Length: 338
Image (cartoon, rainbow, N blue to C red; front, top):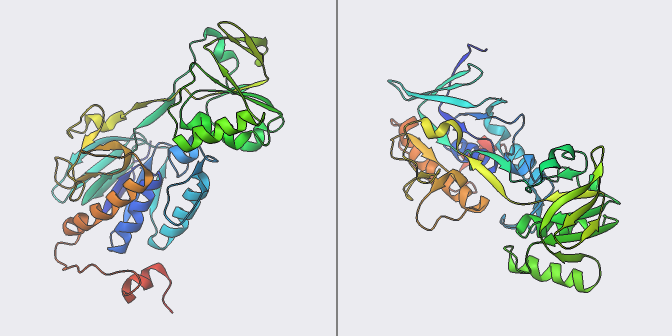
């Protein structure tokens, strides 16, 4: 157990894309940050579950993978020297005379003027098909995420599910798989209309096979599946990707004394502060009327959060917002001034 104590300006709980961008927005205002994340690397859900999944809604980037987005965010925040505490969970939050104290399950203590909760939906656990023996095949021939696309090259692949993840990966993996079958319990999908249309075009072209039915069992031995069993048929394959959604748990944040609503943290939309002064929530963990769970929305929330955070961290200063294109001091921080 570590007994090390750190003092900084802001503690960010969660090092996913929104937490990383919060470092940038805070850094522009001369606010230093420490980040705590239970994973062993930055990127959150993007790198843990979907590192190679294409993301289409980042401005000026027609398409980027979760891993690439994380790497570019890390490059963007490098001038601000954030400190990361990976492999640790924020287990307690206490009020101090000058702000807040966060203690991790590894014994690390961090004190700061403000706390930013950017923990997404908390910890993510994939929902699994209701098959008793599925554990015998997991991480051998049954998977719930794509960490490396090349791992599915030349596979006879079945993708089960009807949401965005299932269709996006069916579209992305069909060029490298030996064969690809999309399996869903009904001929209606919860994915984006464009993805559904693209999938149906690939089915019509014979590049993807679409099978409607319920997955009831697996056939195989020694961790290697040979077929997925449906209620009325079976489909031969050697690899299964199951996208049945994720179960999200808020984790210790729920015990911090912050108001919660159905596992999420209500915030105001002026600066995304919680019911407790000096504690903010940005990204998928927060809730407000009209909330959209998009990385893009989280970036917007981080920008407004930082403006209010400045008043807590530097109350003696008067801050006038300046565009990075016109402020020489900001350009110096970013290392881009001529």
